[in-house]
Every structure is written in C-alpha cells, then in structure tokens.
Image (tube, rainbow over all chains, first blue to last red; front, side, top):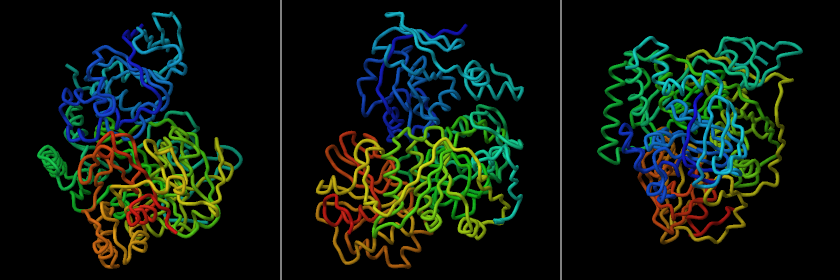
Length: 169
Length: 430
C-alpha cells in the first residue's frame, strides 16, 4: 500500500503553468535544482519562503492549464513536493507530472475538506485523500495500472529503460 | 466526395460511427474502431519541438538509446527565443544543432523560418489524418488541416523520439457549427474569443472539437488556424476543422507525402453540439488575467494602452497583417504607444514586404521585429513594466505572462489592436 503524507499547501482554481514556472526562466533547460528555486516566484513569491519539501499541493479546478512547459512539473518535483491533488487538471501538466514520477490525483471535493496547512494522507492504491486533522476523506480517481506503474518506476525514463531492458542503477 | 489520396474513409454502416479524432486514433493504433475513454497506443507521424528540444534531448540521453526512431519524422526549429536573447539560449541552440547533425534529422529550420505553428503547415508537415505531437501547447493549431495534433511534455517527447509511439485516452468529441457572415473588421479571433468566453478555460478539457458549417467553409486557412489555436485555451486535447477541398489543395501544394483525409461519420456521437451564428458578432477582447474573461471591446473602450502587439501563432499571418495595414495606412501610432509587429514566418514577412504592408507599419511608427514568438511568452522583445497595459493579438494574458506580474494584457483581433494603437486606448475598429 502506497501512502503519501504531508502538509497541504493550498491554491485556488485555474493555476496556470506561467504562474507555476515563469516564462523568464524557460532558458533554464537542464538544471533541475535551479528550476526548483523559481516555483511560483512571480505571482506567489511567498511560496518559496513558506513551502517545505514534503508538502502536498492542493489545487482547485484546471490545475496546470496553459503552456506545455515541463519545467512547471519539474520545479515542483525538485522542490520536493510530495504530490499534487486537485479538483481537476489540465491535461499536459497532468501527463508531465506522471512522466516525472510526481503523483497527481484528481479528487473532486478536496478543496472543501482540506484547509491550507492541514496534514493530509493520500492512499494511491485505494484512491483516497484524508485530512488527518478532521478525519474527513474524499475519493480520488484511481490511476490506471499502467500509469501507476510509470509513477512507481520513478517516471517515464526509468519506465522505458525497464521496458527496453536497460539497467536502472 | 473523395478527397485527397491515400486510404479512403471506411464508413462502417449502422454501428461504430466515428468522429475525426476517433478515426485518426483508430488508424494510428491499428484498430478498426475506438471509443471515447479507451486508452490506445498511437504511432506518431510527426514529432515537433522548438527550443525545448533541449529538455527533450536531456531526457532522451537518459533513456539511453543512441538513435531516434525515425530521423525523417522529427521536425525541429527555433522560434521562442530568436535570435538568442542570452548566452544560455545560444548554448541551447548550439546543443540542438549538434544533435540534428548527429542524428541526421531531416527537417530542421533553425531560426530562419518563424513560428512552428506556421512553418510546419507552410512546409507540408501538417497533414489530414496524421498524428502530430509537439512540445508546445498550441500544437492544436495543426488540427485546422484535419490533423490529430496536440501538445505534450518534454520527457514524453523523449519517449516518442525513442519509440515512435505514445498513449492517448480517446477523447470525447464536441461539434461547433458556425453560420452567418462576419461584420466588417470582425474575424475568426473575435469568434473564438466569444466561444472561449462562453465555454470557459476548462470548457473543453480533454475533449476533441470539430469546427464545421458554412462560415468555416468560406474561411481562409489562416482564419481556421486561429480557431484551432485558441481551442487550447478551453483545454481541448485536439481541435479540427473538418477538411475540405481547400485543406487538401493547401497541403497537396506543399508536400508529396501521402495522407488520408479522414472525415467524421454522419452518425458519429458528440457529447455537445453548439450552433453559433456570427451575423451579430462584434469585436471581442479577453481581459486580464484569463483568456475566458471575454467582453465586447465596447465595454472596455477608452482603456489607455502602453503597448500594442500584432503577431504570434494566433494572428501573425498575412491576412492579419493585411487587416492591420488597412487600418494603419496613412495613420500614426499614438504618441506614447509602442506598436510591435511580428510576422509569423519568413514567408509571411516577405509577402508583407511585397504587398507594402511593412512600409505602412514603418511609416505609422511601428517596430517590425523578426518572425518568431516575440514577447508573448515573456522571454524577450517587448516585456511589460509594472502598471503597463498591452493589447495583443496573442493567445494568453495570464498574470506575469508578458513581463511584470503587475502588467495587464488584453487579447483581441489584429484590427482591434491596430485601431487601438492609433487611438492610444482600446478601441473597436469600425
């Protein structure tokens, strides 16, 4: 059973990828630690001061809409974000996160039962998000098994290496 | 009606009637039929990247395969930051050029040609019935040619370079039929802004859109591309203009590659049907800071502006420049306003020079910049200071998108932007 625990860092609806990772840093293409230093920098600069590694981002509707920039998922992963749970996701961000091995869960109602700063638990296998302060839970859409496999393998690169018979040391 | 060449449409009678999205994914996945929500693995016909090929490249190296799956199906070019605005970008360009040589990538346009969503169609890479993926969200644009075209991330593209295939969930389809005639100076941009305003930024999430109807039949290829380009801003996975003779003529004149002009079956199933008449449509504008915050221009008329921008993968084509030049001819840009004009491609630029539009722009006081994405994505060439206002023909007005997070970006048609540049404030063309 896979559990992810962390403190909720909450956002509203329509958080787009320009907000998550500003366009001015798109020239950073390979240094992932450097990308992590610019999460939400332009519009929510307090994130970099108050968020911690291990936090779980709780988003509203259409999280990650806009540009296909993978840096938006990469910066969160290398910042140390444990997972992103949202009312709904835009499709490219959703796929990018999976491919990087960053768990993403669609959990309708999550913004209703989780407040900023609450400790939450995610049960990936059962598709459940629990607020451990209030004990309230919401169901999340369960990921298809082949997507879970990509996440469990640590992302698409390691997953493909496994499929292609290359070692993953 | 028989369109194009290559394999003809199979119309299974009675059952298994399919939309365009379903037909293309069935073909690409080797199935007779597919249904919405089914997950299929599709063979990729064209894989496009720009500067972010640098991110793809790193992931590709990490997969550990030496050669790409097909050096003739990968198309690479630079458009987001050209010429290089920094040493970092120069190094990115350099690494990609080396990769192109190393792999023998056949279709590489460097920084000479312009924006990917114009250059690929111009060179016959956007074909009906194909699956085209690009590491750019506005890849939906190519659906104007009946292509299943969508944006993907860099790591996923590395997987495509390695294997030539990708999984898709078959999208549900919605149909938007357009009828009527546009008023003078009202165009495809006003239409699609009004649709985005109605449906919302998530109104077509994960879905396929099919545009059809008499207005679409009469529309130029460039105008059709405006519709499929901005469909992304409603979350659409793909957007199509149902291909017709105009589509086939355009593509056929640019490539010898075979293609299948797949059309929707008569009784295909749609989750939503919209009928829109444009007879009474007026000039529209998307207000800060979201693309679905759409109002008639008249409601925000009088808002003073600092910058006006005509260009981008949405509205940097010849007809867009023509529409702006018609309004700017013999006029002056208002003192204190910076008008930037950025042709979408070298070919568009050359035609605009030949037709005298560029002279009109220069005489009016505009800055004409090299073809490319310009300041749209906030990288360079005309970023905004705090408190400044820009009216732009681009496709995104998110907070902080074009420079300062305290700047304001309004999205409108080339005619509205040109008229506003003259007035110094947001003004509808008339």
